[in-house]
Length: 252
Image 1 (cartoon, helix red, strand yellow):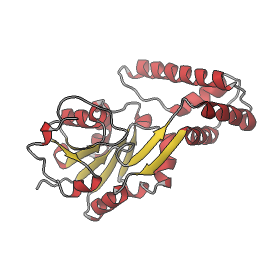
Image 2 (image 1 turned 120 degrees about the vertical axis):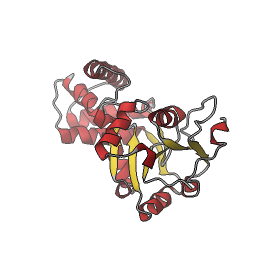
Image 3 (image 1 turned 180 degrees about the vertical axis):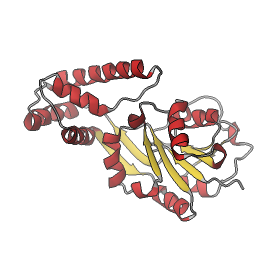
Image 4 (image 1 turned 30 degrees about the horizontal axis):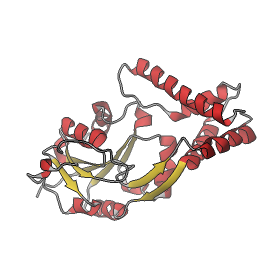
């Protein structure tokens, strides 16, 4: 059986079952009241949503020009700071962090760990494996969620796309992890729920992978790569340490 030294996990849809909705009227009405009451930033809720989306697009274009590639990942903190600046206000870093947490809480419909998530991470840890997180995520949103769900202690290192300005499926984000942690591809495996952001880029990067379907998985046509193993539950990672010859024949 093939044994790996490094286990690289996606987060949302793989370890965490989450559903968020930033189109809720409830979100923008309450976020508008929060900004006005605690920070003196006055936006009608409809205008607030439009301005937020415009600033996200503006920040994306700015970062694309700065980096010279796509896709980029913005830091949402810059958007919240720009919302305040447009109204003549200045926010401290602490204020921005607090606002980000409130925004995320208001937009979250459901968040919980998938069954077996902590049990699998614990078993890998006990076996002396290295565990890494490579997530398309905003650090200002995700840090709190990782702590509240008790995941932080399992990871040897955490890589958020918002902290590096790039994201999966771009190989540059994989480079951040492999260069920063001095990992070898042949000793590493990617575990994810998204064909386009996790499995296909891992294959192109030269990594074996485990694919697990979840409510957050996007549909895809065609087969999984030959070096990808489909699993139905996370616990199968502990059993299937060798890529099956038939793994690439699965269709969704």
